[in-house]
Amino acid sequence: MEEITIENIVVSLTFDQKLPIDKLLKKYLDIEFEPEQFPGLVYKLQDPKCSFLIFETGKIICTGNRRMEDVEKALKIISERLKSVGVDVSKAEKSVENIVASVKLEGEIDLNCLAYELEEAEFEPEQFPGLVYRKAEPKLVFLVFKSGKIICTGGKNVEEVKKELESLIKKIKNSKCFEPY
Image (cartoon, rainbow, N blue to C red; front, top):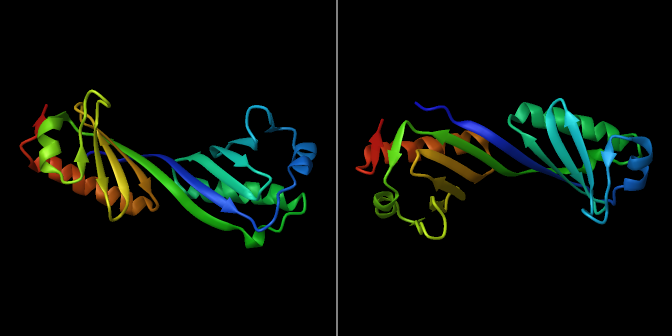
């Protein structure tokens, strides 16, 4: 079985209070803020390697992690920094917003053929070089390319994303649309 790679896990934290971005800027010199370019603070971690987008409204987006363990480690770091400037982090709501995964099949996929095999598939090569396959439940979008590359986006759970990608890989390989190398 091909190796499925988690490319990005996007998580949000929502607080029921405004965040003191001025205090964060004064206390932490490694936080970037250029309000004419972007309305939030940008805080980049090196370990785990990820970025936080911090908004005064009480919303934080964490992006760039590839493992849930790294997400948890990153959230612990940002929580400590927020606590140090008086934010009550105990009431934050955490939500996985998006998981992006990819896989590369060892072969070529006839996208015209696959567009007929998969319900809910769209393939308009003059608009986009890949086939777009939308799954209603769970709500996921797959981008399938002739080269055998498949990207899955919209996931909320790593195991679910892997399971759905494995299912799609099986469908493709069992169809007449796949030509292995």
